[in-house]
Amino acid sequence: MDSLWTATADLVTGSGVVALSSASDDDAGIAFACAGGALGVGLAYFEIFRRPLPFAPTFLRIVLSAAQFFSMWQDRDSDVGAGLVAIPFFFVACCGPVGSAVEYVSRARVLSAAFSAAALVAAGAYYGNPARSGPAASAYGADLRRFLAVTDVAFAVASAERWPSAAVRGAIFALLSAFPGLPRSLLRGPTPEWLMVIYGSALVQSAQVQACALRVELAGTADPQRSLMLLVACALAVGFVERQGDPAHLSFGALSVLGAAALAWAVQKKWVQRDD
Image 1: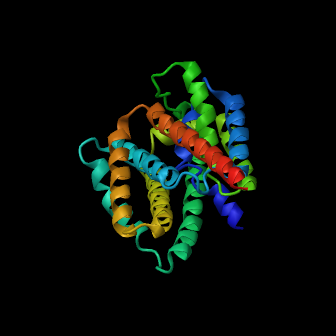
Image 2: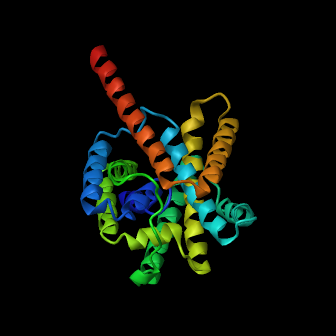
Image 3: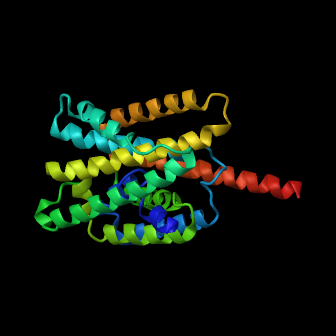
C-alpha cells in the first residue's frame, strides 16, 4: 500500500509539475515522455535520490509546488491573489494530527496522494472538451523542450522511493503526454474556482509533506528547526518569483538536481568500492 501512495503522490504537484509541463508540450510527445520514464525508472532502481544529494531534491519539490500555486492564483487576481490565498491554505495544511515526524510524513503523504488523484480526475472530467485547452507557454526551441521533456519526466519518476512505484509513475506521465491539452489546461487554465480549490489544496499539501520530509532529513544538523525555516522560506520565495516565469526555468532546476544527484551517486559508489 505504501508503494501505491508513493506512486500517486505528486502526480500533479511537486516533481510532477515539471513532468506535466513537458507532457503539455505538443512538440515533445509520448516518445520523449516514455524515454524520460525509462530513464527515471533506471535512476530509481539505483536510488540516486536516497542519500547522495541531501536536501536539494526535496527543496526543489517545494519550489515547484509553490510556483504553480502562486501562478494559478496570480492569474485569478494579479494584485493580491497569489499572496492572500496562501495564508488560509497553508494554515489548513498545518492542522493535521501531530505525532512523530516519520508518522506525520506518512499520514501527510497519503492525504497528498488523495488530493493529487482528486485534482487529476477533476481536471480530466472538466477538460474533456479539447476546446478548453490552453496555449503552450515556453519560449525555447522545440529541440531543447524535447530534451527537457526527457529530463523532466525522469526527475518526476526517479523521485519515487522504489523502482516499481517509479514504473507506475512513468506509465501515468506517458499516458498524460498523449493528451497534452489536459496537463496544459490544468497548469495554465482557464481554471474554474472549484478546481482551483482542489488543485490548490493538493499543491499546498504537497509542499507541507516535502517540508516535513526536509525536517526529517535535517535531523542530524545543529539546529534543524531553524535550518528548515530558512530553507522553506527560500523555497517559497523562489516559487513566488517564478510564478509567471517560463516553465523551462524550473525544468533547468530539475535537470541540475538530477545531474548533481547522479554525479554524487557515482562518486559515492566509487569511494565505497575503493574502500572495499
